Length: 286
Image (cartoon, rainbow, N blue to C red; front, side, top):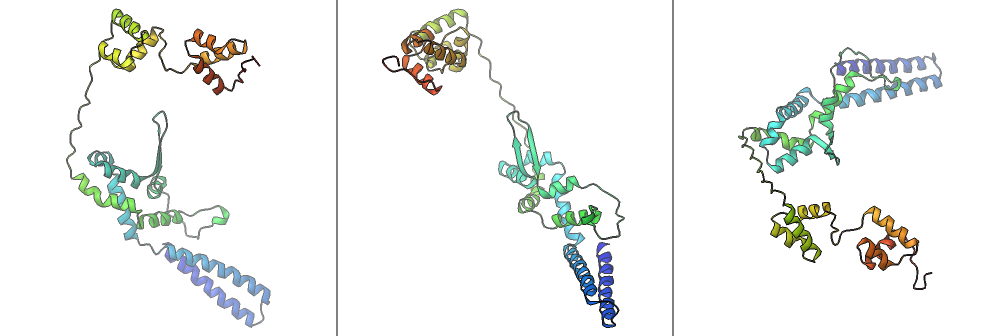
């Protein structure tokens, strides 16, 4: 429809060019007006020729691309379940330009251009019979459909590869999902076992060796000991302890005294104070 419309517009403009030239030869219009009108007609013809070039995409080519995408999007969950890991990566690259997952496992999807065009296209009445008037802010429905057809006539490489292999994937039988293996929860150690573990840890034994004897993981044992108020070795001081270190040091306490009070060595206290930007005193207290 638009090609017929543009062809008629082009014929009218070319006829107008001839009439202007004839009028100029008959001294009916001045040269400056002829030049202005010829420039206007030439610009309109260039726009029409450009539009005609974009309309060379045939309906059949666009339909092949659209059928391929719609065939891929039908029961896409079943295709994804039957696909191998490499095919799943290819499928993600075919459908999306980017998939972003934040810390709360919320996914933000950016569909590929062809997919986004299909999702954004809504059917509207095809009743326009004039050229697009972009300068007036009035777009054309025809423009939307032509752009869509152009994007579907030549699919992106990743989308083409996935479309070519998805029929073979559909023919596979989806294997049953393996049941998630449940791990039996080890019961919490009784109070006597925790007292023995605390005494052994304070005596200098390693956390992993004690946890093996108790029969639980060392991470769980460390959590239980912290709940009992045991300060674990090689643990960084908390924010409250850092604040207390700085307060005591500014009040004149030595590194050794602060470490003995809070349960750290003098070297650890010195390192933490330097990290916090505290200016240390010299051996003369300056």
